[in-house]
Image (cartoon, rainbow, N blue to C red):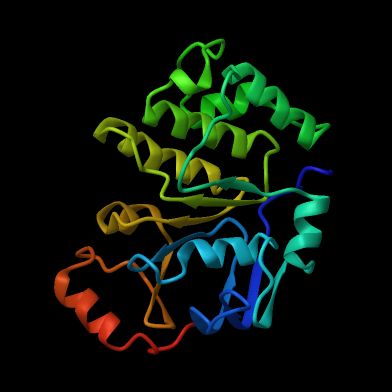
Amino acid sequence: MTPSNGPADLTVADLDIGYLAGDPILRGLTLDVAPGEVLAVVGPNGAGKTTLFRTLLGVLPPLAGEATISGLSPAAYRATHGVGYLAEDTVMPSGWSCDGILALAVAAVGPGADTDAACELAGVDYPTSRLAEKLSKGMRRRLGLAVALVGRPGLLFLDEPEAGLDPGQRIRLRGKVEELAATSTVLVASHDLGELAVMADRVLLIGNGGARLVQPPPDGFTREFLEETFLDPHGGSS
């Protein structure tokens, strides 16, 4: 695997996502994400945020349309350059130390892996000799983020990254996302709209099978703004 030479670009055209046995969860998504952009993905539970991430990771095939990452299919980009992915639930293997988990990530990435830089950026400020299963939820999230960053990915997916973090850690995460955008294109899914208004360059609102791409409103995501947006979920994406 070759580490990326910088942030990736992402192009999505008429994408339908979901599972083969059912109807699409999200239909006709079209958007371009520029290198180094932070795109927030917001929607209610079941709207398709995680399914969208899995499709863009190349783990799940699209039902229609296509997505490309720096000119490659998601699976091809992931195989050649790697991507960073922090899943919504950070599950650590039993009996493994943090050092062992990081070493496993290094072995998967190969040349160019950097655990020290990844741990510093992710805020892993505790002894990594500890058993991962003994960590608090917030510590596990930070370790999971470090694992996602080991290969210096050009594309990074963060699914509910603030889950389990205390208020101070959430504030630090905002600053870290700005740092990450210097080397990665970042897609982040979260329910915390106030934080996203600060972190994101643009916000993709999804719900009821449709999507709408907006700029974070200067006054934050007010109830009126969200009601207007989700009452017209097919308001378009660009």
